[in-house]
Image (tube, rainbow, N blue to C red; front, side, top):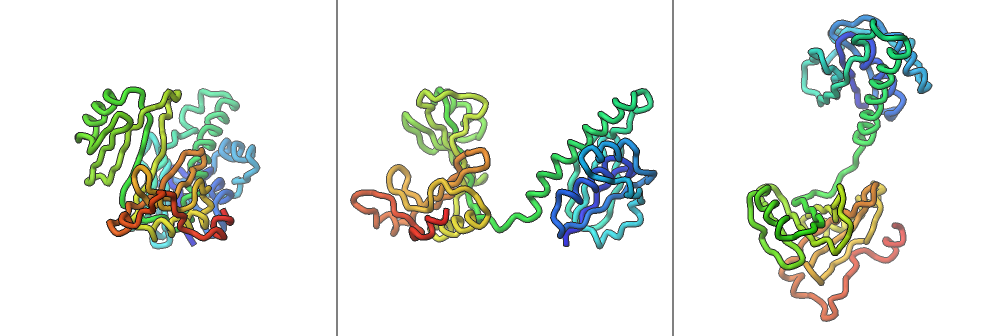
Length: 290
């Protein structure tokens, strides 16, 4: 059981809406509560804004953070923006979501304008809880040892100069087609690739990647990806052309290519086939399950 506490000052609006939204969106294995340093009452506009989404928080009560036993809480989410948020002592995971208090300045607003402010706060909190919901049950991931990124560029010399300055290092190697930057202290492998006349815009990403230890780690990453439900673009294989690698290609929810790779050992390099054709690393029956 994971216990999450939402905190603001009066426990009347933001933390109350967060409690109601989290109770609806998070799994049954998560217990949710809220509190404040100066508890008052649940704001009627908060109740109305939540009712528009089908969530009834009218029976929730404002309570003091002093009534919460820190030993029973696993995660604290503070929602104060303009004020000083209450503090729950103890060793817990802490998140801070600065949401403007929708009750500020409401005396000069109409009822509809008041409600609009609460809707804004509600929607901002809801979007954050949607992200949190996907983070609470993440299974084991591939043990990355290096981060790789590639982007397309229009002018390779200009881009090499810029990134040499930004990363404070010369590229390890370059050709007329690409340049590779290595920063071992950052576990970074970064490649600039000529654009090949492809249209460049705000997203010039070519692909991302993580380096893992060896061939077995790539195969294990494949099974982890299948269990997680990550889309498999190409199953694990050993490739020889270009940079010899054991590699697995995934796609993220937006279709961006993700490479999980391991460099070949000297013994593996020595076994390169004459035709340099890829060698798939999982049985065809496993591939059929993709």
